[in-house]
Length: 402
Ligand SMILES: Cc1cc2nc3c(=O)[nH]c(=O)nc-3n(C[C@H](O)[C@H](O)[C@H](O)COP(=O)(O)OP(=O)(O)OC[C@H]3O[C@@H](n4cnc5c(N)ncnc54)[C@H](O)[C@@H]3O)c2cc1C
Image (cartoon, rainbow, N blue to C red; front, side, top):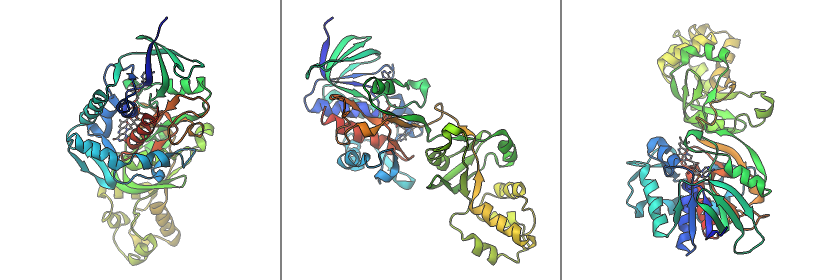
């Protein structure tokens, strides 16, 4: 069977795939983007609550989890947030900054999709969508390295880029395709698991925390050496809110296999020196809950004190109860029982092991012409636009080389 030949075939027309396709197309390469979805870039559409948190003013390696921590440096330094902001501005997309340097579209995430689509069109990228890939065979030929059987017939290419993303939100087309191809070509996989995901609590804890359900408050959450300061939400299923999504990427690092769950530690008043505060109010007649209501939502303060047995005025607490109060305020330990899984996870932790990839080009060191970009790789950003910045940076790095 004769094959339609391209210089570059990219499987997955999401954030990373489109960025890579446009770069390669602008270099004069004949590029085909293949995607099995009927709608283009659904993950961008639903991102950032529909406004796409497309990057962050401050991006550094410290905002990413990766088994090979230095891997992200090269691509991030060569395609920075400023480059993407320049692209957004060139397309006339209005945007605004929120807390922690996060940049969002004023209007809609659709504008980012339209922008990438138009870059691809200007670069002469061709499309096979929807189209599925049945098999990929590697050949010993410098120009025709890969033969691909697809629902659009047989295709061939010199460079094959896998940009099929992670496993989160299967209902909009996430698949383990990228991991299977990695395995087929001898690449290692760091076991994937849901990240940036709400944490669930065991029934007995849920019952205990029932009176706190619905509370939302700014806390510092810590887990496995990581600490974040943002809002926490207590829900009828467990813990959520940005601070919990952030620590979820660090939680269960050791325990995932053994199910020996580790606690998340919450500091309710991270700005306050608790010992000094307790001394200052040592002779207070007010209930502990009323004193805490100065800093915490009133309903929460009362329910939390009832839960911990601090229902007396502060001055009536004995020495050991005061110590227990200080401990609970600075290190309130809650042990989750799991996560809400890929259905609710924003990203997938783990993926194609970067130790087998070039940090400059994203090419597999043991398989010339095969590239992995975006979330399919073992690179996971914090919440705040970092996952898109990785998609842009890795897509750009590969697009300049394929
Ligand atoms: C609800 C939600 C909100 C988010 N909000 C943000 C945010 O505001 N900021 C941020 O930085 N990140 C956010 N993210 C994460 C971000 O969307 C991803 O990290 C990013 O889209 C990854 O880009 P990618 O190109 O690697 O993968 P994707 O954008 O997921 O693209 C993968 C593409 O591959 C296609 N594909 C999959 N399997 C196959 C197959 N077998 N054959 C053919 N095609 C296939 C898919 O259809 C898809 O088009 C959010 C994620 C979710 C789920």
